[in-house]
Image 1 (spheres, rainbow, N blue to C red):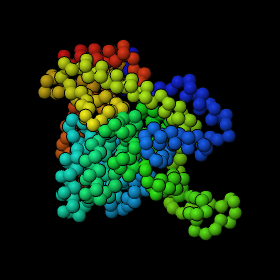
Image 2: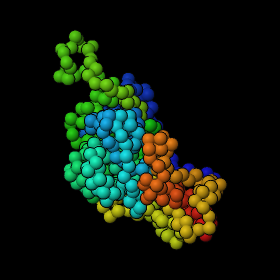
Image 3: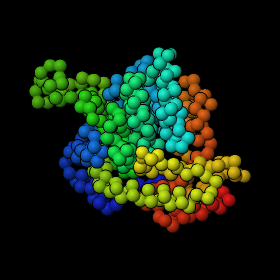
Length: 386
């Protein structure tokens, strides 16, 4: 038996939706992309959505649309995938991190405030802050938005884990507290397009900029051109953009998957509750859900109470894998990566994220995980820890 930590769920309706596109006149840049964008915007309550080739592309475009440039600062969480920080480097900006709340594993608003106060005195305030909704649970966005108003920075929510989650009864991605929010549709996420991402926003100026940058900075809109068109074939490149487009094939899969998102979230939350109950007497810390949040539970991360164990973190991890449970670890703190160490970061810079890393294990969490498979995971974890 091998149980992955995550897996997509593709049904016959999903397959038929993709086949229909393959038999159509449009494989890319067609009407299915716009249909998918409108559906996600409607689901989240955001006014605009721009589908792109990956969440990494979405983060990059969001930073560009926010005006991030050389010499600016971008701050994010060290407990994330490297893309949340790399997007700042792509724009030529400097990157820094804000340590995490040890209960939510998200960016700590208290640490953010402390760091902002220090940065203001040094003249190094961020242009952009990217809170990461780790494992599907929203950051404390109201407080972060208050700080954004006080210190004049733009917020881009990295909600790659969190489509289907709620913050204060509003869908993650509504952009009520941010300029933009980003989703990922990688196969291990809540819904998938194979590869793909999306930027949500309520601001038309950002929406127009995102559309332009998504496709080479080229427009066919005469109102945006610098001279009258030479004819109906005419286009102009008016900015330096990228080929970050999604295909109609991917959008068809995403649209089909979106129809089942409530079912996906319900199952994940059911599995999370079973983990919480059945692991309660073990020397582990299970995820804490902030009262303002309803997590999408993209991941289910436990923290080992190592002072109560006679095994190391690595031993527990490897014994689970030997039992056919393909656990993972999300994440290695970004500032400890060799590339970022060469930029001047070092061990000890963000102690809560580093402490979390020494204790964390991501257990299997996905829609298709059966109760029996989950019971096997729980039983094996109990054997290993007790």
